[in-house]
Image 1 (tube, rainbow, N blue to C red):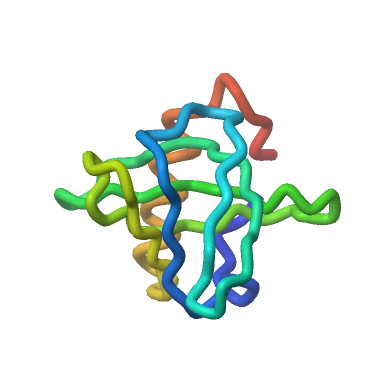
Image 2 (cartoon, rainbow, N blue to C red):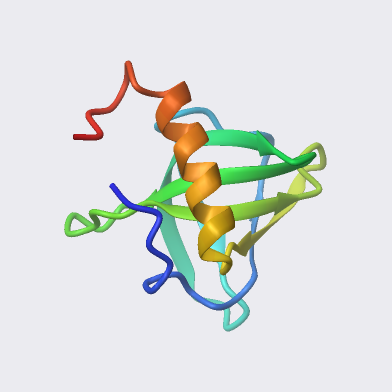
Length: 106
């Protein structure tokens, strides 16, 4: 898995519901009203912000996407794609460390 951002939608997305749990499918709605399903992998705290690590449910998906989560404690969250490659990589490294027992990163 990689934190490659080239496949990240360049829109904001929002999802209703409380904090997701690992493996839960969440549906994000982009600025154009398109619904996209993702598997929630983890919520990572980094530099006082929350980031969701998601993977599209598309069977061909092989890269995770990193989204900044705003209003994480409210019922309607906003997920903004992380476009800064260094920030995405830092969050992904924390994700790998935290989840090494659940995923094979080799």
